[in-house]
Length: 221
Image 1 (tube, rainbow, N blue to C red):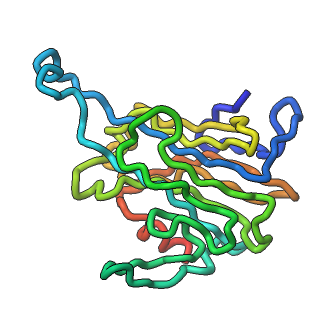
Image 2: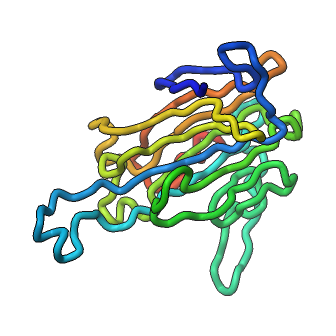
């Protein structure tokens, strides 16, 4: 059975509380969310109301070295006239879905949160990662959250979870109904890090006012 984490709690990704081993040949970090329902009453439902506008939450991963820094910030490319920074570096995000090593990638960019289960997934081959990578930081941000006046206080059932390669859920960290997230458009959700020859997973849940991971990145450059 998966462990429901609280903020700051750390678990061993290799073994569950019964001492059984998980298969870390690949680990899926799943991100999910729902948009809060409006209380529009009968007329609201009749005329198509009852739901907030779509929210685009983005999953991002920073690969950190043993100094706690992103060593490779990638490069800038011109994609059909659109300038993209941080391409093919140690940052996984919607404009750079796969790490050059092939050992960590984002499965896609869900822009609505519709559907059950994970809305976005980052898959990591932990055991195949170069030893120079000591930690993976998982960030989530609301795309154009400041511009659209959207924040985490308006999102329901936000969660991050870790699942092993055989589909066994290892841990889940949920965020819901916390007033301290009002006005916050990004969050440092969780981290996986090396410790004593194994991988640990820690729930963080630190919110940020910014809606851009680039602002959060400043601390890790």
